[in-house]
Length: 509
Image (cartoon, rainbow, N blue to C red):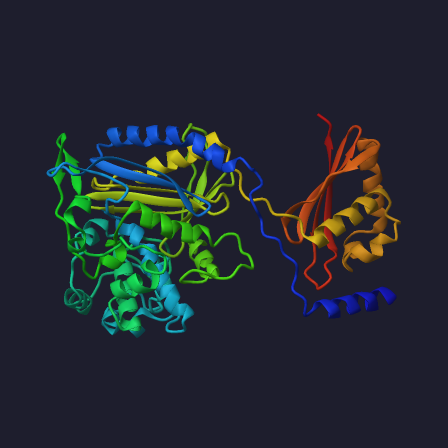
């Protein structure tokens, strides 16, 4: 009873106090130097890829901890005029534009001007003229369009050539009716039409063309001064012309003007400007108490990065050196989320249009990004960047951030270390949750621990706790013949105590 009232008093005092939190951080002081040492290998990799894939020109960059630390440009931006690619050359980035449109929708959501579960027809009434595919289908929502689950067919060949469609043409298209590929909210299928619709929603809700809204609310606050929508806004010497490789030679692709489908793929930008945007996304991690500085909250960006629609399990995926590394992919908000069997997580999006191919990928837990832009139709920069990322991870041995253990996790680990060696220790009353001995008798814990201690031999040290999060971690009691690994979880009350524990003996090597 006394313990109950003591805990109740502590909990009452803590209710209004903020839980202490230290965000994860990088611990390798030579991290940047290792990355810089690997850059010549990356340059050689991109040059070899450009030759293999017949790229007229390309530029790529490496972003580390918010800074563009390396840029390499090569080849030709305009074959007819023999203009070389520079870091200031502006490329059309195609579907890399989609995350900007998604971000605009989320910014309007944060401002209370729309909801993600709004039916599309609430903002674009013309869309409602197409009857659903099945009687039990609910109306298509903005969220479903954002996550590529609206029920439209994959439409790259058709959508890529409609970039310059006018608003009137688009509304006529909607008014004439659409054809479904599948019922909405039943699976992932990549749709440019869906993002053109989202751009139209931004226009209707913001009361101005989506291009103007995104330019003012996203480009300008991020300092993306060289990013535009219309090719005529780019001085000719600075514009990458698009080509396709056909019958052993490059053939110019028509440069489309800006239009309603630009929301899915119309942005024209530089490597430096894309680096600012990518750094903005990277800066959302880790969650922390710092003041907000971007055009949207960090939590909104993190929401953008998380998968919402399952895309694929790629069981035969391999790293650049041929090692098996199965990965799974999901679609988020204009971005693809991926994690492989190494535990490496990255967020990415490719861009492909007649005349252009590009990709950017960033690694939130590792703090770096790769961006590459090329002027050949559907240039395979996804594969090129993937191999470069593996090279960088391997050569520089980049490690993810480390999470420091919370004070309460350290406290409970020390108490458990004492308990494992003596379950009659009075500390049990202070550190164990009420369920602990109900789930398993104290005598059973004492018997298991005694057997493990015999296997381990005399205990010589206790390792620091390694946190999985604020309330879960591992530590070891190191003995002369091996170690006892302890994995424990605290409960979520105001005063967290140990609710679960597992012990395992690991022989000395």
